[in-house]
Length: 253
Ligand code: 1GP
Image: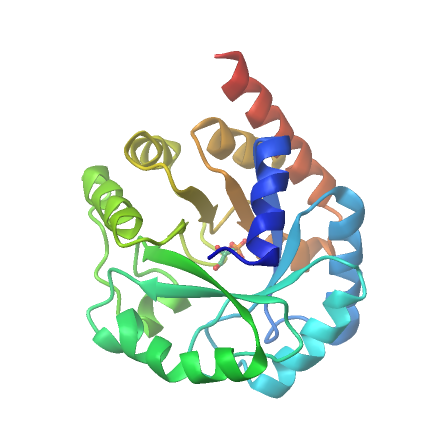
């Protein structure tokens, strides 16, 4: 059953057509920087703050970043890289399975171990299929990913459909944090044509134009991390304008 944060996201999505989430990596931002980014995100119109990263994340660091980000008033959602990268101060957790990992640990075992902690902390689990498209990223390496051939977007679409058929309500197309290029818009369109669940896209989004293109192609939620760290949140209004522009273009078609 959807909980409070998921319902909030879905009602904003219905109203606004597409959303932006600000990602903070505890290995890269200090609590003060996290507080500043989250405040900018709230002002600019982001829907929530995601906290997580593939390397160098401890529960203690997560706690500090979540507490700092919460001052913005935005909901905080953990973006876990492992069974114990969770914080009791967060509102929710993407309860996600790395669908195209070669290792069952990242598909279901880490989740089994983490489930006890999610329950104990009372975190709202939001079920998500996670698809990491390539190996050129920390998450691809750590998650032992089997990359999707770029010329076969239908494979990504079928993984996304699998997530939907398994009852996951969100699917995330991950291009890798700091990627030089975003997930291709054609891939997003291909997945969009095939699934009805909420489509999240992230990795390498740096400009309003990137955001517009991906939303126009059918992304429901965009995630940006690196560009916010680099600009201390200053690029946010640009990106959110791009999200809104993408919604207009999509609706005008
Ligand atoms: C990483 O998709 C997210 O998991 C965000 O990527 O840091 O490139 O914005 P960036």
